[in-house]
Length: 324
Image (cartoon, rainbow, N blue to C red; front, side, top):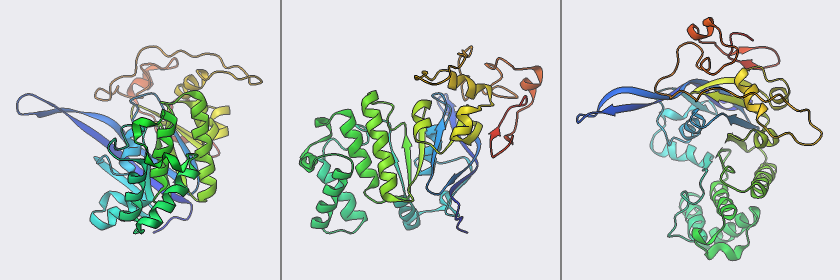
């Protein structure tokens, strides 16, 4: 049944990758990239998903667009479990779900011009005539701030920021309802990052109900673009709240440490710098109890034995910590 409020629901999602060894490639363990994540994404919002590298946020984004096969759980899009779809049903839903990758160069075919890449999408999947596709392609380039004369260029002839604009034009060519932005600006210069962020926000205004899952490790960018924010650590959600609530009243020690690393701009109150000890444990060897206890400055013996569940501490602010 279609949910008018939430466009996408993730229920107890697990994505494990087998570790194989020996001549017979026997499975000796699993990398638990995503380990029981439940999220809801509201129609028309931008949900920021943050965390250190290796926490599983990209794996969630790729699972949503079916580039990864989850081990268990459900992903409901408009009430329909997209993990159960095959054939034509899957192709139809994929038109509504698109992704922008971190590295635009690797996501663009080096042998095709921009014109070929975009018009092929429009003729094959949208059923347009070649003339209609060319007109629409020029509109898309204009929307992402590129001159139509660039249509005959190949990917290697663009700068990084321009390539990302081409990738965005490809992603919105099918007029998707849901867009996964997987570290879409992290490889770009700071000045170009702001241009791409503003472009994404402008496109959201033009397309009305477009929903974003914005995956990033840059909290200053996430603060600027997101409506709500989820913080991940080692495959689990540690904290989930509205943007203003999370950045003003972070409750989890991990979130507090991440926020303390954001450069302080003029006029903002300085935060005490929190430096976490040690490295992030491997997803193949997750610690018992609270998976953050090996780096948490407030960890107790209870934290080593009991894994905390997400609990509401008020106004939909969810935190997975035994001490909160």
